[in-house]
Image (tube, rainbow, N blue to C red):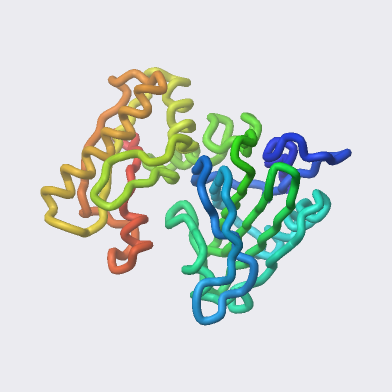
Length: 305
C-alpha cells in the first residue's frame, strides 16, 4: 500500500503524537478533485431502506476526490486500512456496509457520487464507510466509497472540514498522477496515441470547465512542456442530445476550453489544435444519465498516432 493524504494535512491542528495517513493502494490514479468552500454535505449514517439513507447535514469545506485503481483488490480491502487510520485518529465510525447491506440501488442513488468516468459503482460490488470526529471548531467527517468496475476499482473520498480551516489533500508531487515519470495518463497517451481526459466536468449543453483543479490537464501540460516539439489534437465529444451540427459546435467549444486552460498554463498555442466530433464517437450508451455524462468529454490525440 502507498500511503497518501496525511490527516495532519487535511486538518491542521489535529492533536496526535503520530499523525495517521489515509492509505491508497499502489497504482491509484486520481480522476477528479473538487473543492466546494462553505457548502453542505449529507453524510450517510446508515443503510438505505426504501429511499435515501439516513444522513447528517454538515456545513464546511467539502472536498470530493476519486481514484481509479488498476488490478485492484476487493472494495473491502481498499477501505479496511482507511477505517483503521480513522479509528486511530479518534474518528467514530458511523457506517461500514457493503452493497445490499447498504441498501443497494437506494444507497447508491441516494448519496452524492461523481459520475463516470471519474467514478464507477457496481451495485453488487461496492462498500461504503462514514466517519466523524467532533472538535472545538466543528465536525470533521470522511465518507468513502469503493467499488469494482471490471478489472479495475474506483475509490471516492468526501472530506468535510469546518469553514475557514486549511484544506490540502494533494499527494506529494512525486506521487501525483500524470507527471512524466508516472505510468498513468501520459503513458497511455504514448502507448495508445490517444487518451480521454478524465476529471473534466461539463454540464449538459455547456462548454464551461467547472473544476479548477484537473490533474489530467496538469499531466498533459507537464508532458507538453517537457518537449516543445510535441503536438496534440484535442477532440471534444457530446452526448446524443440534439442535432449533430449543434453538437459538433458544442464539442469544439469544449475542446477549445481545454486548449485555453493549457495555454494559460504556459503551453505554446502552436502545440495544440481543437476540434469537435459531436456525438459521433460515444464511449457509453446514451440511454442513461451516467452514459451521457461519460460521453461529454475531451480526448487528447497524438497526430498520426
